[in-house]
Amino acid sequence: MKKQQLRVHYKKLRNALNTQQIDDFSIQIANLTLQLPIWKHSFFHIFLTIDSLKEISTEPILSILSGKDKHIVLSKSNFETRTLSHILLQDNTRFKTNSWNIPEPENGIAISNEQIEVVFIPLLAFDVCGNRVGYGKGFYDDFLKNCSKDTLKIGLSFFEAEAVIEDIESHDMPLDYCVTPKKIYTF
Image 1 (spheres, rainbow, N blue to C red):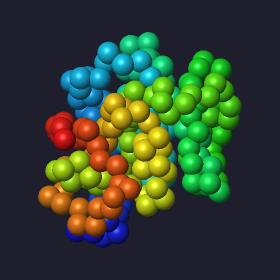
Image 2: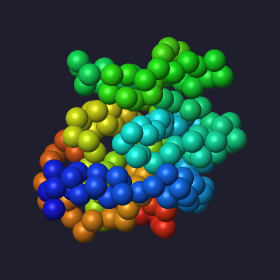
Image 3: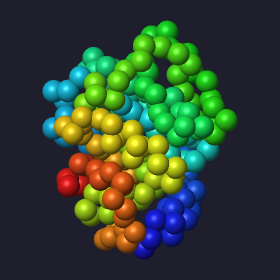
Image 4: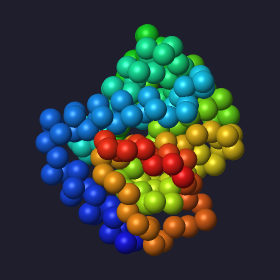
């Protein structure tokens, strides 16, 4: 299928999930992340859940990162420039929901793309080659292009891989791993 078809299909599948399923799947995904070869790293970028879009709850992963004393980095979106800036999560970090209903840190210590070693990436669908379909704005592709070539890219998905995403473009950044409730895909 093509990206737009996949977006429509997977939004419908996510909308069919109830709160209990989302919570259960999110915990299963978080537990599987413990098997990834990523825990020697220090700077972990993670997205905050947009509940209205029925995204994976990242709270369980945030708890793991915090328990392992990792530096947790969150994004702030600039919709005019279609860029992300990155802020270190601290005990006193305040949050605000932006106009797109995305929870973001209001302020804090800026972290450069080059400092980030592991990125947990929101997505709607992915294929067996590690290609992903996001919401189509290109924020993550641009962000990932400016990270170190060694930065690990980890997708999080409620659903298993598609065989192929037909319309991958040269600017699309592939994943290194994708974690679902049932398994870890390695690319």
